[in-house]
Amino acid sequence: MKKVIAILLFAVLPSAAFGQHVWQATSSTVSFKIRELGLPVVGKLSGLRAKLTFNPDTPANGSLYATVDVATIKTNIKKRDAHLKKEKFFDAEQYKRIEVKSTKLYIKDAQFAGMFDVTIKGKTRHVEIPFEFNQLGNEAEFKGTFSINRRDFGVGSKTILMADYVTVTVDVKAKR
Image (cartoon, rainbow, N blue to C red):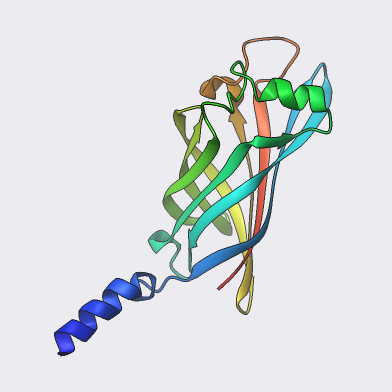
């Protein structure tokens, strides 16, 4: 009987076995910034879905996973938004979600960081993402800013009109 109870507890509470906390996203902002014709273009994506297992005392045992809905891209110019959803850029019809999945989490320079597989348009690249984790009781915030080369993912083409590098900021509020 003791074996059965132990097995059930391990199956039901796997994160507790490793000292991790499971966080449920309550709100999020995913924004980006890129230069086009020398001017900053800012935008947002929504529809975040996340699986966040993290304890700041043992980050190496955690895992962070999130996706956003490509069709939700907004830059406050409807014509540009429609253009970005087309095949040349994000191909929202074929590639519905952008995915970010941790492969390793650690402490770096007095904050947290991780190696993440970032997948856009079916292309996956390994990206180091530094992030802050702030907790107050059963509520927390995960916030990170990183830069990626859009051309590594087949988003747009080589042009002098648009920068290659995009700065992405992810801010997720969560509760336990």
